[in-house]
Amino acid sequence: MEPLNQLTEWVNQSRNIVFFGGAGVSTESGIPDFRSVDGLYEQQYDYPPETILSRSFYVKNKSEFYRFYRNKMLYLKAKPNAAHNKLAELEQAGRLKAVITQNIDGLHQRAGSKEVLELHGSVHRNYCMSCGKLFSAEYVLESRDTPLCDECGRDIKPDVVLYEEGLDTATLQKAISYISGAEILIVGGTSLAVYPAAGLIDYYHGSKLVLINKTATPMDSRADLKIEGKIGEVLSQITVS
Image 1 (cartoon, helix red, strand yellow):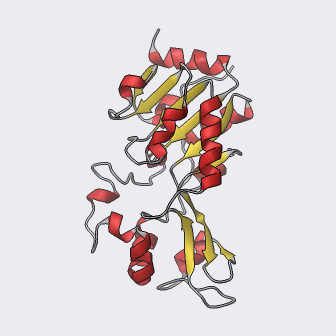
Image 2: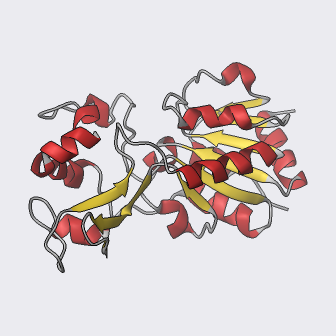
Image 3: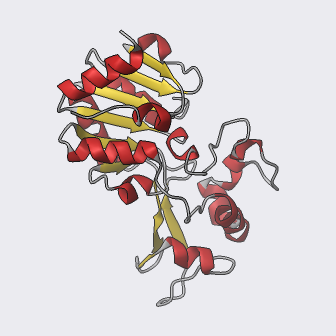
């Protein structure tokens, strides 16, 4: 059976699908992949992205951190693409249990998905490091230099997981629970190179591991079904019955 037909058949036979996605899910919305040839990691800046997006750099160089963050991380005009929309449709149809994402753009929620686990946080949540007041991404984008709390005047930090920071324990445990209990695990738009997130696949013990990606991944040999291509183009071809 053709891979796409096989995937469609599996999807329509299941009510316990979990989707795990990475940066490739959002590239079709115009948000660059950190590690693609044309992505953020290939662009020149004053410091390597890994350095700028680290906790220690944020603490010591907030002004430079935010200059990079505003220019390279905030794509607030981006809209959900076919992948986001199809996943929301699958959830509404009662087939998809959860979306687990490494992305921080909030596009799954904008598409209508309800159960979204954001492993690396979200640009749409920003908080005062002193009083805890929350601020929008628009507030951060429109501010100058380091954004400051409009109540206590202290620094605001994005609720995103920087290098040197651990993942949220509750979110991670919930993701493990969904993956370990899934009938079908669809993994898309990720190189499976970022740990500990990539290691979540080890908790899947079913027989329908689906990998959808434009390039090869370290997990290809473990896949029960592999489809090469853009995640949005592939998922949009699934007809939910």
